[in-house]
Length: 300
Image (cartoon, rainbow, N blue to C red; front, side, top):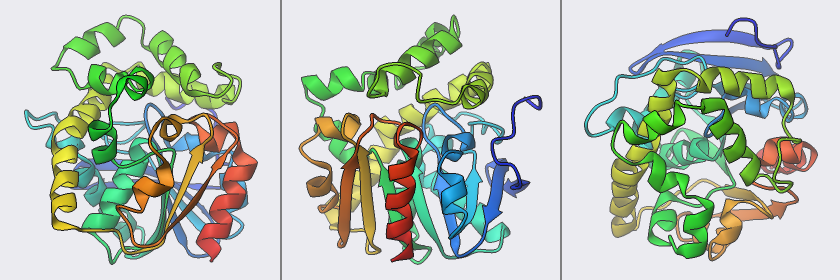
């Protein structure tokens, strides 16, 4: 994947050894540390449209999650634990420590948002402020899976099927699957919001059979250990104590729920948020509004 375009000119590249293998990350900007975590089925480059504006105020840390992009692919296990959000959050903590920061601001989109809120629950002293983009907690998704939501997020049940069912089907046309899935989540229902150079990154990573399996393991963990972790925290009344900002697309996935702000207020003590004009891929469909909202929240 070395011939892919550099979408972060002037940023540094890092390979960081962690307990889950060597992780890749880009860093740049000036100011307090801000960790940006991508989602499915993307890589660190999903932040490239908002990075220039954010980098004026924050030092950005933009990794590839385990199994995604250029980061290591942990060996799958029967319990899917290497791809649990708890395990991925631990890797993000290790990565930030090795890059010199034990406390930081944090934003996550999609699966990265699940890693982010799990990190805030498991490591509350690490996170100063948390932004979650176009998600509600895993607990709310599984327990609120009615007919309408299930049709929009059918990949949750598809990708969580036992190996090798989804892998075998996706591998017949991975780029076609990825393009159709991503287009269906945008407000325009097409790929016009995506920079072709970013799409090339997504296509390259998602054409690797090992990484197709890794992304399925991510969702298998979501249906098992991630849900169990949420259920345990809910039963104990555990909440996120740092300020939380929910940002979602007006045509995004949380728009099909009972209400993102009401749901997040069950999980955190200080919640604000708003919708923006976009589908699921908020930072790429509406980068100006996303950058402005995140800057205002993280500078507060």
